[in-house]
Structures are given as C-alpha cells and as structure tokens.
Image (cartoon, rainbow, N blue to C red; front, side, top):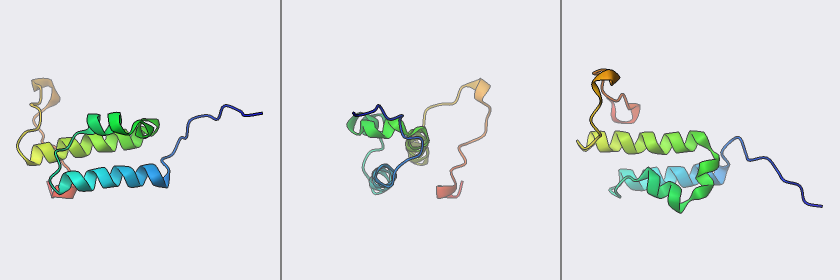
Length: 87
C-alpha cells in the first residue's frame, strides 16, 4: 500500500543541478527570472534554500547590470554584497 511521503527537506542532486544550470545560463546572458524558473520547474519549490538562492542570484545579476529594485529608506544604505562579483 503506497504511503504519503513527507516532502524532501534537502535538495537532491537533480534539483541542485537544475538550479546551477539556470544560474549559469543567466550569467551567460539569459535574462534572470527566478519567478519564471520556479513556474517552469515547480519541483524547485520544495527546497526553500534553492528558491532563495535563485532569487538572490537574480537580484545580484540585476544589480550588477544596474537594474536592481530601489531600496526603501528603512532598508539602509548598504549595497548587495554578492561574493560572486567581488562586491
């Protein structure tokens, strides 16, 4: 008799590879779109760490390109410190 398994708590090699592949494509010129990636690959939604990682990667790439969202005055004046880009 089949049982209902709980959702996975850690990303699998397959979902981690998918997330890395998406980020690599964004770094090579594809427009970054975390929401679109999650819509196209809903299996990523089971792994909060991958969702956050994709959103942060999109933010950093947009900031690097000069199109990051404006910060509110309550968010402080510090910039994104994305280590991948030496900021």
